[in-house]
Length: 80
Image 1 (cartoon, one colour):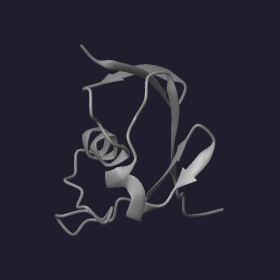
Image 2: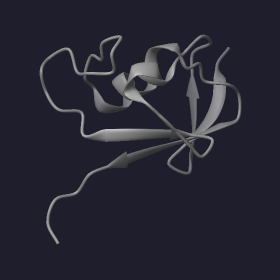
Image 3: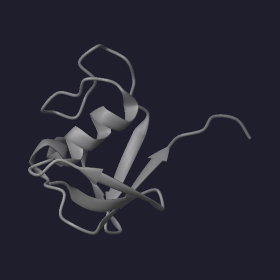
């Protein structure tokens, strides 16, 4: 059984008990620590909004994903 949600406008599913941190790690392919920072030293370069509220990195590991949640990944783009 999985939890249905929307990520950047597309249908997705996550295992029960998943958190924002779990989703970020899975989507970016980087291990993410409890503090929301990459464990391998790379910059994640992403902010996450869940149901229109930006979730601070410090809360990623404790913010659960609920059925039908809307999650948006926002990345910084350099240049102009």
